[in-house]
Length: 242
Image (cartoon, one colour):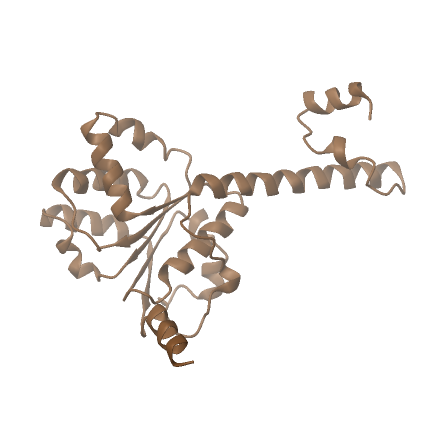
């Protein structure tokens, strides 16, 4: 390929045409150009999805395809498995709350949904709540909380995993409340928790703050209840018995 042609592709921001143009079968000009540009767009979307996955910072690589739907989830009337997997809730800026005992598959499911969202072009961020609280308190002490808030301006979906495992400090709770207020009806918030909403006051010092936060979370939210025994415990027991 000539340097001139490669430079033209670069100036037009055609990242893949230079490597593709000799591999596309030629039947007629329209078919060839269409196929070439479709391949360019497809590879762009794949690359964008990979960038989104890196920025999301998932703690594992669990996918929806490996999730075991075995009837242990109680869906609300307006949502089912197909609708959840369609990710329509992100476009509609709705929240999803997954509540149930540890080890019942909540983190796997939200990770799979988040990874699919990344590949579909959505900006996603994944946080364990304890890690997020440490970040919030650090930025608050250093006077950089406002700059941290702005990092979510272009994010479509925020996953908060393990809400309720640790109590919050006063500063941390207030910072989290401000973030959730920012995201309210502007982004999709997905939360996993081992506590029911009535127990969230265990995490927050201020009961009024708890009520206001829960109000924002559950408005436009789908609440999924997880039942059954811990998958991890059952798996460990089955391995020991084999």
